[in-house]
Structure formats: structure tokens, C-alpha cells
Image 1 (cartoon, rainbow, N blue to C red):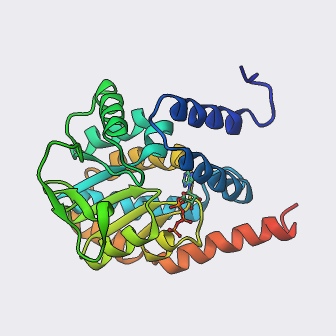
Image 2: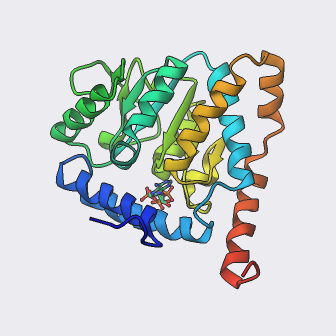
Length: 250
Ligand code: ATP
């Protein structure tokens, strides 16, 4: 039991969630290592949403609201940390969720599907018993996607995707929104909109922004997207990290 007064309470609380998810079969062992890498970047970002993360969230919300076939892709870490918020976002936008696992097992897919449904998810794709379609440019099991889900989607929100798949999705013409604490990852650099933030803050921010922009006209939403420059945004995150690293902001 972690005491609320502990100075690292929030970070330790998330770590405990990750360990529980591993023990419950939601998360693969390597998901814990991915979380550790995220923690390190979060530390360097000051463990709060930066101004550039908020700008990326605004562009992401605009893209999701304009999309014809948007989808939210969920992996083990996302299911471990924010299952309730993913479902809330999916229901707010009325869009499906697809389970998309790097280390896929039928057992883990079933557990994540149940977890999402227990939180009120309406449409969960990416399960074992549905029509699959292959994403061009990928080999093996990672090339498989739901025919009605990611394969058909024009806009894909995918927290913590791996670089190869992110590259393939962009090459297949998707507008790819990712959430990744590492601004240097291939996924971050390849995506159309990269939210450099922790999913535990980024998803609630995205829900609020979707609600705020829901009555905004299409022209303004298109402008928000065209004013957003992903490369510039990533560079701002790197500047923030380098200030922390050199002690400039002590
Ligand atoms: P790439 O193939 O894109 O270069 P990678 O191999 O470095 O990525 P993965 O192991 O596929 O990375 O995924 C882990 C990524 O997820 C890391 O970049 C890490 O910073 C990020 N990450 C981990 N936990 C979180 C979190 N809670 N919120 C946002 N990002 C996270």
C-alpha cells in the first residue's frame, strides 16, 4: 500500500497498476519495460502536460472530429492504465476501439475485451473471431488488423505503437495520432500528430478538448490541423527535456 503523502505517490501508483495488470494477464512482461522507459521521459518532462502537448491534443481532437472512420487502438499498457478513460473517449466520439497487441495471445485479447466492456465499451474490435485484413508493408502477425477497424480507418489514435507499424499505417494513408512520452521514438517521428505526454494525462485532456470543440465548424477544425506542425512540436518537447537535463530550469 503506497501512502498518499509519499512524494512519488502518483508515479508509484501507476507502477503498481502496471504490475497488477501484468499479474492479471492484461500486460505482457515487456510492457513493464516499456512503462519504465516512459517513466524516465516523464521525469524529464516534469510529469505534467506541456504547452506543446496541449497543442497536439487540440490538433488530435480536431482530426478525430473530422474523421469519417476514426478508431482508437488499445494495447496492454493503455488497458492497464486508462481503460475507463479510453471507453469514455470512445463513447464521447461514438467510435470503436480495436485491441492491437505486440505480444498477442487469445487469452490477453479476451481479458482486455472484458475489461473494456466492463467499463462500458460498445464496439470492441481486434478480437479473434472477426474478419481480418492485412496492412501492406508489414510481415507476420503484426500485419493483421480488423477489416472493419484499423484497416478501414482514415484516422487512427494509437497510444504507444511500435515504429514499424506506425510507419506502415502512415504509408497506408492513415492520419496517425500517437501518444508517446519519447519524442525520439520512430513512432513519434513518423506520426502525423504526436502527443508527447503520459497517456494518463493525455487521454483526459483529449476528452475535454473533444467536448470543447464538438460544436466547432469544419473550417476552423481544418485550420487547427493545418496550423499544427508535428516536427516543430517534437522539437519543443526536446528543448524542454534538454533544459531539465542541463539543469537550466532548476
Ligand atoms: P519505436 O519503435 O517507435 O522507436 P520503441 O521501440 O522505442 O518505439 P516501444 O517499446 O515500442 O518503444 O514502446 C514504448 C514506448 O512507449 C516508449 O517510447 C515509451 O516512452 C512510451 N510509453 C511508455 N509508457 C507510456 C505512457 N504511460 N504514456 C505515454 N507513453 C508511454
